[in-house]
Length: 216
Ligand code: SF4
Ligand code: SF4
Image (tube, rainbow, N blue to C red; front, side, top):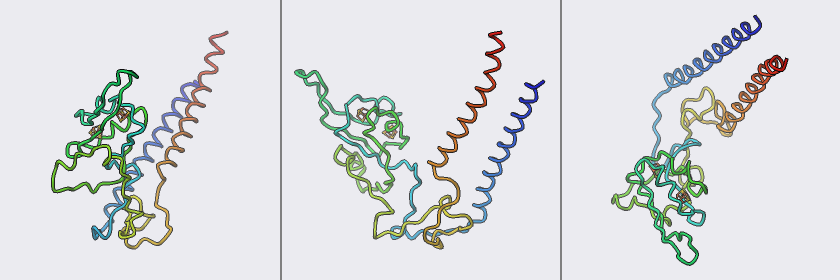
């Protein structure tokens, strides 16, 4: 009987959290419905990319071990790892590394799987060029530190709607030092960790009596 009641309680809890997330999602939709068109005076004003924006890839030559994992996990085998085998040391010697951003789909697989973390996605999105061949970045171009909208003194950085404080619809009207609505990705992670911990604690409580019973 107790087990049945526990199941009902769990089910109700799940239903309540599902309803909560549904309302949260609808809240975002309604926020967008209230929104008027906002003109960003590019290039004098630029939108700040989100925290997990997947822009131009940054590469650190010194950390690369020429393992070619990035090539294997890339959907189009795009990165070119140019290495030679040193017969004396019997080790790979890296000569060059390049990625063609004219073909890259910015999926981030190479960054995710690189064993030495020498690749990272930056917030740089201004890659336009007159010649498509100049989109093929070698290790020097890939090693260049990215530009940042927020540290460029000639640009007025603007926040996107999702990053504005509650009730503010236009980034031009943003009062100074106002925090955005909602949680930061780091705070979301903390919340998720807490939920997982609670779930683990609850499941260990459920398992404990079963073990005792089986010993008996
Ligand atoms: S996965 Fe990383 S370490 Fe391996 S070749 Fe690619 S960039 Fe270099
Ligand atoms: S971001 Fe994706 S498409 Fe671009 S090089 Fe990496 S794995 Fe390939």
